[in-house]
Image (cartoon, helix red, strand yellow):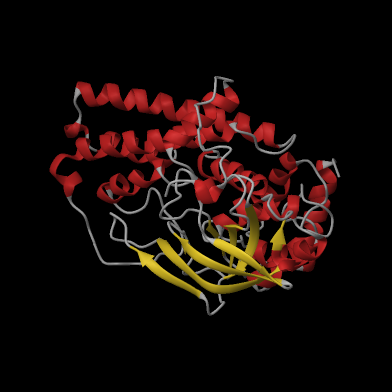
Length: 393
């Protein structure tokens, strides 16, 4: 499928058969998936038509003009941006058939059980264990910083299955049922007062081997697909000029001339240029993605996103002076979606602090860029070849 006109015809046929004005949103989304118009670059039968990724814009434009319902990607960003591409690449046909459709329609929300209290930046040092028991695996451990765990039906999970080999080799990748009685989700309150993150305790959780993604012991390789897509999802979103954090600051600058100073003006100009460079770099990255899988370049866009969000939100607070120090509500809330630019300046400033941690810390991303993009010598790693059980913890 490479003909934009044919895609338009298929989209119009979908609209004619399932008029958005009278069709329930979920029924429309299911029909759209079955017609191959969900992810046009996915295979036939799994929401796509084996079309170039760039042609998704043709479908989206037709549906937007008709007022068709969307699948609320902000509510299921981990599922759409991270779990789906990993399942597509490593999942069995049975796994794709079971998980992809309700994931895309939003019927089943996903979360990510990767980071641990003792294995955040050094993710490969994770200690959550999965022990084979017949046709199942018994999982015990703790995960942290888990967005959407309180809403999730499924989770992508990595656990240690062999402690006798080096840390990167003894990991296996699973799909975990978040409704299992052995799964406990606790809110993790952030500096904003909200608890969009969680900590998750796994006690005797049984995962069938049929829910394993990839080979036993090759979970680190599978996880790289997830992590690369995560960074692209965070830092490489398609956005119009002067949107996001820079748009908030620019709007305040235009609406409140009495707050302006020469120094703040220079910082705003620098931030605006940086945001535009990041936007155009993200566009180039998306064009590269159309030809294959995301690579380490996604680390650069995510790194730039975090830096700019923190610089610009700090500039806005300074621009507003005493007003920027106010905060509307510290009530503990557990939101369904992340809104990086929501609410007032104080919230944006505090929420941006997490941008340099989530999706890979900025320090780790700089290492990835240095080693995998620029080809610089790797840092010495004395623990790389040691069995995991011999590592200091």
